[in-house]
Length: 287
Image (tube, rainbow, N blue to C red):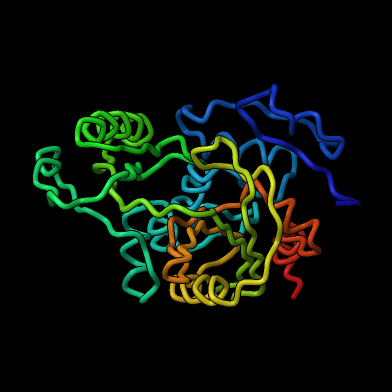
């Protein structure tokens, strides 16, 4: 934005974003695994008089949500810790959304690996094995039989453990084919101001991830569902949700909440809804 000094905090100095002409302030490199990371970032903000932050990484954002009360001089727009933890945990968010009466894929409860042998015999493959954490499709696998299911289960579980040693077992979920849809929103203390849905023609990687080609669409049903979820959570700030559409039931199925800007936020901006600008205006106490 004109008149603003923009800095970037990143652990990847080779990221394309590092070459943005908008970074007139400079780049700070850090390791996301460093001890006292919150204090280190906060200290740099105070030293360089950085009084507003937008966090693109959901794990770093979680760190700031947990330290929300310590943010005396730096402004961020953050939801409550209860709402954020529901969004961050895929099984919690699916259960929460289901209670609101919004369709979700069928889930099979797994409390130990032995439970895999007790799945119903008539279960239909493929199945989705989804980790509680991980962005894009990094912690998502598919299985066409029981042998693959056990192998993928272990693989996803190990990946989740690297992020959170207390992570629960992966989710086993019904596979719903068809195209993927994504909805982005901006919320002001529980009041949803805008929802921008889009249809994914292509995503990267192909197994599911960042939108590579898409178009914005009008979807009253998806919009209605998203508003209901966000108002119930009393959300604050930017957020995205992923959906699958089943033409046989003419229904959208909720997949997950992304408690951050989507990688495809530029699609909303190009469509005329500048969600980052709305966030900055909220930081500036503008209506």
